[in-house]
Image (cartoon, rainbow, N blue to C red; front, side, top):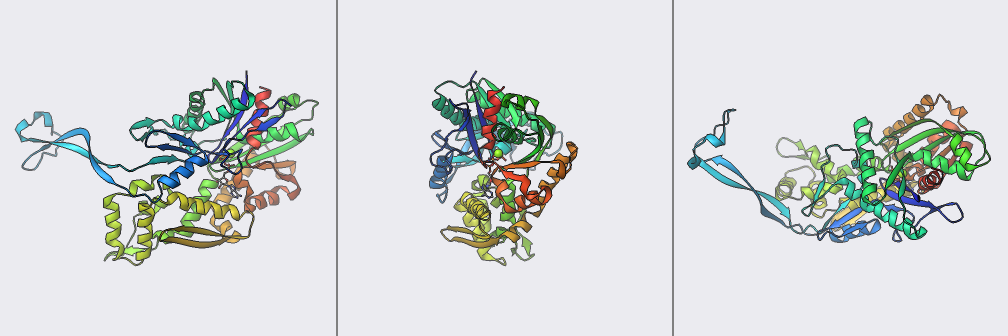
Length: 470
Ligand SMILES: Nc1ncnc2c1ncn2[C@@H]1O[C@H](COP(=O)(O)OP(=O)(O)OP(=O)(O)O)[C@@H](O)[C@H]1O
Ligand SMILES: [Mg+2]
């Protein structure tokens, strides 16, 4: 049976197989992406049903959806309701339209507003949505897509690339999973079940799951060490922060070392890159879009849901209705900050929440290498230039840092360990590059013990190794 290791991430996906030299080999998945071994976990479905994944999906969305003119038309839904014509209708519990004289009933056909120009839809962070029990599928231009199908488009690409490389069919996907998709046990089970179904839809016969930080630790065990050690694996990506503590024993073969290794504890939570980006938007950019606005004679603030839509670019286009736009135009001249209300309106009308998010993410990433950076966003009249430095960034993400520290302590407690007894801390995942997180780990465990494994591929490599010894 042939296996491949798949690290399906909230932001990026990577794949590794065991090559002819018996080593884990990470495969190129997306030549348009930097690095090409990471496939952005994005899916774009155009109105004619064409599906694209990865960097191409993002490009198509920006080309076609951002800044376009929205044309809403009223369409019949094909459903009717009855209304009593003339006089006050009976609103009591006894009201039954079937008992009313048909001559007094008026038939009203239900209509809906449809965006006839919508060129396509982009889906991001689908892994985070796997847990929502109420997720009943998404209508994409008249076709109902279950979340499993959307995820399967990314996994199909992984399978294709791995099979191309090995020139063999692959039956088993050895997949990573976060320690907790959700704090709720039911949601966690639902998410894993859906991810398994997605892999089956992609064509795998069997799916085996391992915790992501465990896979990253096994990668180290198999390639770098033969010592007896207590190792902590910390994997912080786009959606989750995952921690494990493992005990490794020396042995002559990798197989023996893997079979003798012991997981002492695992823990995790939904605090990672996506949450950090939202915090930056909330604390640094909300005021551009009206968080301080007061409007009308009663000095009312903007409704919360309107501001929060800035954080939810995937649904921003839904706000582009005549009612909302007219309302924003209406209050623009009766508020304390017309330019902010205008900015919010333009953001909605031009549908540029995604590029705004990218500008924030870019500035955040630069802060890992430079002491200051700039959130630079320019789209037509919308202009934002906001400097941010490491100190301020650290304050902005203070609560997130506390949650991460809490997870480290929880992992230690569950493993009956103290920081001194941990010999090595392995970090992986994009969010682990943040200096404040590195600093926290070094302060707690000692600078010499913290070691970075490859940011985007350690988990996939570990999964490929596990697959070999399954
Ligand atoms: N240099 C950097 N500094 C800070 N954050 C970064 C950097 N590079 C990437 N990131 C962030 O890391 C996250 C992506 O990391 P990664 O690819 O490890 O996540 P993932 O595996 O897709 O997610 P998860 O494991 O949580 O499902 C994104 O939030 C991205 O903004
Ligand atoms: Mg990851």
